[in-house]
Structure formats: C-alpha cells, structure tokens
Image 1: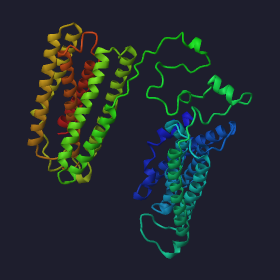
Image 2 (image 1 turned 90 degrees about the horizontal axis):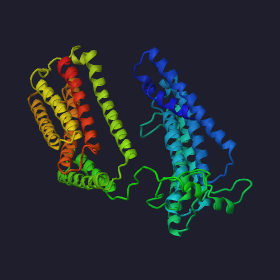
Image 3 (image 1 turned 60 degrees about the vertical axis):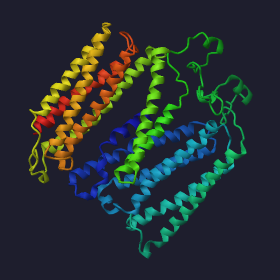
Image 4 (image 1 turned 120 degrees about the vertical axis):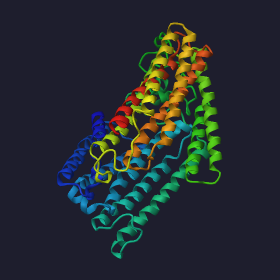
Length: 526
C-alpha cells in the first residue's frame, strides 16, 4: 500500500499532458503520456485490492462509516476505470470536453472523495463532540446519497458516448432522456444532504452522551466488561474522554501491554507540551482579514484599503503576543529542551528547503525562456526592445552590500559564542543597516529600469525573481532585528541563541540565492 501511494505520487508529476491530447501534440508525445497514465492504474489497483483484502481479513460491521468507506471504494473504482478509458489519446480525442469526462472526475472527486469524508465524519464525530448520532438515519443517508449520486453521474457516461459537450447550458432533445434521469438523481442527492443536516441537528439536540470508544467490539474470547477493564484500545485517542480535554496527557504515554506499575518507572518525555493559547486562532483570523481585504483592495472596492491597514495591525499584534509567549517559554521557563531545539532546527532547515524549491521554479522559468527564446521574443535573449540593467552598476553594488552583511552577521554570531556581547550587537546592527541599504537600492533599481513586469517573459522573470528575493531580504531583516533586540535584552547568551542561529542560516540562504540571481539574470541574462 505504501509503495503504491509513493508510486502514484511520483507518476502524478509526469502525466499532466493527458489533459492536453487535443492541443496538437505529436504522436510520440501522446504515446508516452498514454503509457505513463495507464501505468498509474497498476498502483491504483494495488490500493483497491489492499482495501478489499483488509475488509476480507477483518470482521466487517456495516456501521455508517463502513458503508461510506465501501461506497468510496466502489465510486473510486468506477472513476478509475473510466480514467483508463480516457488515458488513451485516440479515444480521448473523441471524448474530450464531453460528459464522459464529467462523469469520470465526479466519480473520483465529487463522489469518491466525498464518500471518504462522510466515512471519516461518522467515525470521528462521536469522539469530537462527545455525542452519539442516530445510526439508522445515518445509514438511510448513505443509501439515499449512494442512489442519488449514481443516478446523477452514471448516465453521463452514456451522454458522453453520444457526444454531448460539457460547459454548454443547453442541449438538443436527443440528449433529453439521460439528462432527465441525471436531474432526478441530483434531486435525490439534495434530499440526502438535507437528511445529513438533520442527522447532525438531532445529534446536537438529543444530547446522547457517548463513551470513550463507541465502536468498541470485544475479541472472540472476551466481553465488553473485560475489554473496558483492561483498556485494550486499538489506539490512544480512544482511551481519552469524549470530547478530549485540551491537554490529553501530562506526559507522553507509552502504548504497550505493560501495566501501570511498569510504565510508572519511565521518566517523562523530553518534549514541551504547549499550553492552550488563543494567539494561533487570533493570528489566523487576522491573516484571513488581511488577505481578503487585500484582494478586495486590488479589485478597487471602496474603502477596502482601510480594512487592509486594520488587518495588518491585527496580524502584527497577534503575532507579537504569540512570539512573546514563545520567548517566555524558551528564555525564562526553560521549556525548550534539547529535543525541542532539535525539532526547531529541523523545522528551519525544512523551511529553507521549501523556499529553495520556490526559487528553483523561478530559475526554471527563466532558463526555459532564455535558452530557447520563442518567436514572440524575437528568437533572442534579452528580447527585442528590452534594455537590460547594467550588471556592473547597482546590481554589483548590491552584491557587495549583501555579501558584506553575510560577513557582519557571521562576526556577530562568533562574538556571541565567545561571550562578546558588544561585538554581537555591533555586528547585528551593521547587518540590519546593510540589509536596509540593499532594499533601498533595489527599489531605486526598479524605478530606473526601462521595462516593467508586464514586458513579456523577461520582465516577468526579472521582477518576480528579484522581487521574491527582496521579500526574503525584508523577512530576514525582521528576523535579525528581533534577534538584535533579544541580544540587547539579554535573552540570547553564548549557549542559548537558537533563534539567532536560525535567522543567520536564513540570511546565508538569501545571500546564496542572490549570487545565483546576479550571475544568471543580471550578468548572463543581459
């Protein structure tokens, strides 16, 4: 199962053109994408038979969650089979943009995925809410929805075979029969949706309290009382109350067959269990306000820019309070143990790797256009009519400034390690000043450039690449400014400066990316 999932993940990156068979691809390209797409059916079939084998090897109880899980397997299988049909380039030329495609992806997504979500809902909602729902109504919900969605989408295979195009609001009378059946199925699906809402309503209103493990079934040579007494739960969450408390376990539990006396001999875990905090949800709401208002402002909604300012203030405020608590946990409470620090270091490294992948995509786009310029670009790079920026003027000065900032922050780091607090502060101040100078010169460069981001592939790649890097410079400047303040406030010492090291690592990453930008876009690209 795991290898099958990994195979699908890898193959999914090399089959994109099976959506593009009708755009004029040559025969060899269509043959490759047909073969690659058909190969995905192999690991997908392994997954389906693994699910069926799991059911065959177990004792199946047709609970609502199990019914929806089996329904998912059924829908997913039909969607996969129709996908195998569409994978053939010669057949897809006829089926492209017909209702056969609509039926295919609805069986996979709107039915397969939704049935899996309903399965998870009915399985976990008693634990989440601590309330039981009406099992009979939930099963009725499954059967009505199962009949409704199949009645809606299965006839669309026949409509596609007859040539009915999708994305057209009207259709000839020849297609009326199966469309009527499909419409009746959609009405049945709506009824099932209302029934689901009623199931949730009755669950909340009737207030039937559930136990820790509502799906408990004793083993063959046992009974419910013995199972509850021994607490033989399949996983830890079922040993908790329903709903679970904010802090489920004071220390990391060991899930094994050892008794409580043996388990008590083990020490507490080295990790830090964070106390319930309001700041993550406040920050999320503030970010939602900021992004929504920014989108409205970009579309010229009246007075929306005021909400942008409000959202920005809320984001800064909530994050400041959040970081205040983190600083308190790390500096004064001593909660950041070696295990926590190791995890934080790993998180910073993964973050930098993810940012490197962003820049890799930018460089890919740049070299794709620069190495093989299209006719629209005049078959040359830089394109006709574009006067690139002289790499030996402001870009070279900015290179010297940014590399100097890397040297100053390294000096600050070594000074802090050696206990030289003054050197650490002076080196950090110099780094922040150099970063501000770099950002200012970058803005001047944008103002004096003879092209804009709208000037074809060159302008897009230049401004997106350098602008995205500039955003990282601003973020890194904030990182190092906070670290400077923490050094000044005696938060960071010679043996306790993990956040400072993370900011330094990020800043060196920014330096390296700029070197690639300067060599490829400014020097070679000009």
